[in-house]
Every structure is written in structure tokens, then in C-alpha cells.
Length: 196
Length: 186
Image (tube, rainbow over all chains, first blue to last red; front, side, top):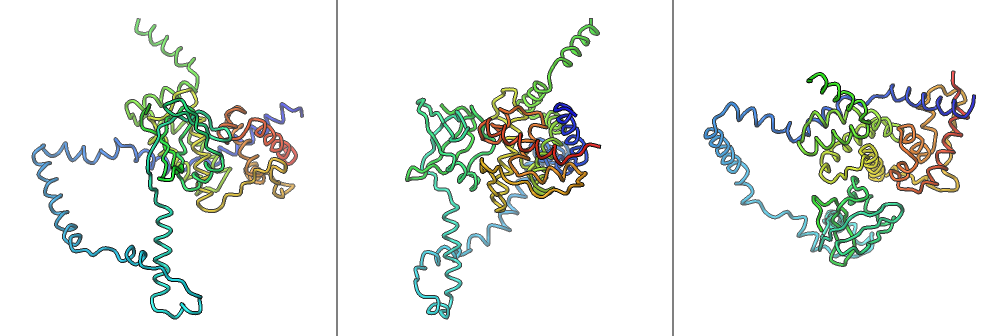
């Protein structure tokens, strides 16, 4: 068997294996149901049945009902304790000393949760439009003044791990580079339109 | 006259390559939101994308990521630059989303050491299932091989995996050698 035959054999084996594992039908149903047009079907059908004025009245009534049901508890609802307590906690001590203190464990949990939340929260200070020029190795961007911005591969990996790089970016895509107040790049997302 | 026009149209459609067909469908979907165009694109690519993701992961992850990729395509339709590379764009999103998924679930092993190229897991000498045989390849070799079988060029594979072309060549060479060694055609 020569090299070409071997290649063909591998290709055939791959295709045969692929035939045995088709994509589940539920994926297509889920994708097609996410189509904006399809989400409108229910409303379109309802619209067709109701004349315009009646439809508006029904929507207004539903809105009022929702406000009555949901609005009242919101007005008197106290602020969540977690954030207040988290700011209060500034306690240091050896484990043996503090284990017996009341509420220590609870406060520590709240503090940790708040700290984690802060790490996960993006505080975008400013955003800069640019175009992705290359993503081989380090990523190169060109901004509106034709300046090149290089972002290291390691930083891209870190941002990806936090899901802060839009996976749909390709060369030529216009992006918004988001920076925090210390000038650190914290997010790269696709710009809706050509921004320059 | 009508028949002549139809004949011309049929000839034109026949000569249209699969690539430009993708572009035409996607353009129509982008401009009009036509769900039939999206559905046609899906039917054309879904099994290929799903199988690539299945080879790289497990059935649940492959199904989840496939769905997410298509949702991303719908979400990013305005940002896509039409360069006749819809399929490459689709698989690039798939590759990145899969890596994100692995990182999130802490299952990602870099396996990208250029010297060792990962090690081949022990293979049953009597392995008759090509799908299982593929699973024995290291992640990066498996990915390069799968993408090549899906019809991508070396340049495309390098772009999807975000590595130099030479690295792709090496991965493919190792993958093919292992497969040839263990795959006995009937």
C-alpha cells in the first residue's frame, strides 16, 4: 500500500466514524428556537387575534398587575446584609483564637464571597476602538490613529480563561478594547460597527 | 426564454462552489435574518463541527459547545468579514469555545510541548474502532488531524489553532504516523 492509499484509508475511516456520530437533533431545535423571528411567533399570533387597542389594554393591565405583585415587597425590602457585613469585616487572628468566636465563620464566608465578587466584576474605565490585525502568537491591534497595540499571548490566554475575549474574533474584526482605571486591558469584545 | 434562463441559473448554481454557497447563505441570513438560510448553513456544517468537537471531548461537551458556537454565530453575524472563510470562522469559534469550556471545568491540559508533542496513550493492538483510536492521540495532534480531514489547509489549521504552520505540519506528521501504525484496514 503506497502513501496515497494510506491517506485515503485514513480519510475513509474518519468519514465512516463521523457517520456513526451525527449531531443530536436537539441542538438544531435549540438553535432554531433562539432565532429572534421565532421568539416573536407567539406574540405575532396573539397580535393577529387581538385588535390593536385591546392588545395595548391587555399589556397595560398585565404591567399594572406585575407592579402590584412585585413592586410592593421591593419598596420595603431592606438592603442585603452581605455587602454591609463584608465591609465591616477586617479581622485577623490565629485559627485557635477565632474559631470559637460567634459569627466568625459566617463573616469570613461573606468576606470571601464579596472579595471573589469584586475580582469577577469588571470596572471598565475606558474603551478604545481598534481592529484585530493579527492573532498569530501575540495579538496585534491597530487603533484609529494607525498605532499598533500588541497584546501578549499569555494575557490573551488569561483573558480567555475569564471568558473576556470574544471567541468570534478574526483578523479584520473591529473590536473594543476595555481598560480599567489603571490602564490594564480587561476585555476584548467585538465592536458592533466600524468604530473609527 | 424562461427555460433558457432556468438552464443558465442551473449552470451557474452548479459552478458555484460550496464556499461561495456558504457565503451566499450567510449573507442572506445576515441581511434578512432568514431562518431558512441559517437552517441550511446548519445542516451543511453541523455534523462536521459536532464530530470535530466530539473527537476533542465527550458527547455532552461536544453538544453543548456546538450549540454555543451556533448561538455565537447568530450573535456575531454583523461582525463577520466575508472572505470566503465561513467554515474556518465557525471552527475557530468552536476551537476557542472548547478551550474555554475546558479551562472553566479545569480539564485543560496544555499538552503543547513542541519537543514531546504529548504522548500517545496505550493503544489496544486489536483496536478496530477508528473513533477510539483517534482518542488515543494527544490533544494537539488529534485536533490537527481532525481539521485536516475536515478539508482545512495547513494555513487554516494554523489560524484556527493559533499556532505556526510548521507546528501544524509536525503535529500532523506525528498523528499520521501513529494512526498508520495502529490502523489496520480490513
